[in-house]
Amino acid sequence: MQINTLLVYLIIYIGTICYTIAAYFHLSLKDWTFLKAFFIAICFVLLEYQFSLRGNYWANKVLQINPIQILVTTSVFYFINIWILNKLILKNPVKIWRELLSFAFIIAAIIVSNL
Image (cartoon, rainbow, N blue to C red):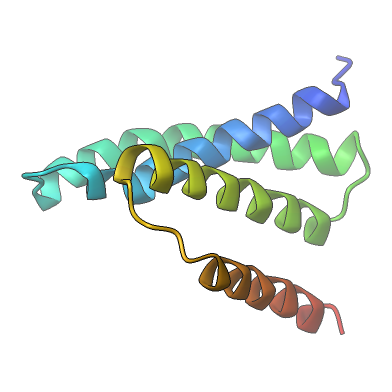
């Protein structure tokens, strides 16, 4: 089966969308309970797992991307999705210096882990 580059990245991106919804969407609910958040999350986590497994496998085998590169790509996709969720759904103010600092810490952790 021929898998192209764009499809692999799209599958990984869809996985990150599902994870972002599973982890943060309940914050937009007015009267949420643990069970309500749990049932929303579990559905999206199962989807995320399927997309992430396949996307990471194909990225490694087909695109010859190593796990660190996959992690960086996935982290960037998480940032994009959380910014979209924060801006469009949660409508929280964005303090750009905090966002950039958080991203710098992730990059630093990746660099340190490769030493």
